[in-house]
Image (cartoon, rainbow, N blue to C red; front, side):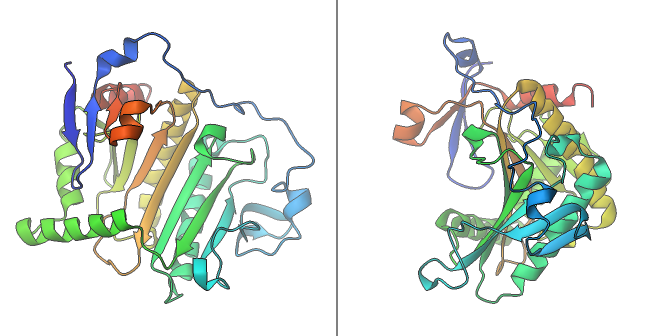
Amino acid sequence: MKPEIRKDYIQEKYVIIAPKRGKRPHDTIVPKEHRKKKLDATCIFCPQNINKASSLYLKGTKNNWSIKVIANKFPAVSLNNKMAYGQQEVVIETPDHTKELEDLSISDIADLLEAYSKRTKSISNNKNIEYILIFKNDGGIAGASLQHAHSQIFATKFLPPHLLDKCQRQQEYKLKTGNCVYCDVINKESNSRRLVYKDKNVIAFAPYASTFNYEIWIMPLRHLDNITELNKEEKKSWAKILKHVLKKIGELDLPYNYYFHQVINDEDQHLYMKIVPRGSVWAGVEIGSGLIINPIAPRNAADFYKNNL
């Protein structure tokens, strides 16, 4: 495959898909440094150290829980700071320090999605909040500061400009075509080489203009504005493919991030989760021009994820 310049589905973002560059010498991959975790009595998220902390959400009981959500003790935004107004929470995904998210059962991962949903609904009741981001940093290079499996919820009254731009472009597309741009993306990717998984509830695919090596998206087939609208069967399907994808990223021995967000005052979004392994090395071209070079063709990434599915 010859290198191609590809444009994002909707925004003015461009990527050069250049598979041959993956064969150049001295490619650098930073491995995930905590693949095999050991028990740590000092871990602040383990039950013996966190059970007494107040819970914003609890799956189980105070001393026998499977998921616990707490306020972030070191927030960048807070409800009592007018200069940086918002809310930050930590979602402790399991009491077991030795487990990664992909080690949990499909049912447990579906429960995690339910926890995200409950907290999103609660935070949305604050009329001053404009934006909610749910994300996970897994591995040091991906931004994780603690090894115990956890994710975070970040909410603020400030809407990032690139998301405002995306909302406006989505509305322009709908006015022009009568369709949701991401519903059209789903129809297109359902029949492409980039398709990884599809059942009656969700779809997973490697996006056409993937910014990161092995980037993959998960989306509900129904046009849903945010995670609070997922039903039980959709959460189960989502959990199934998410578990598989994270196991495959584990085979790459790479850190990763995943995230999805909600713009409170845009009620016609299409929910999607981006999962981005952090094997990419951004250098002069990427930093200087903002033009990303990706040496892994999305269709090859899709083939990797489909293996053993």
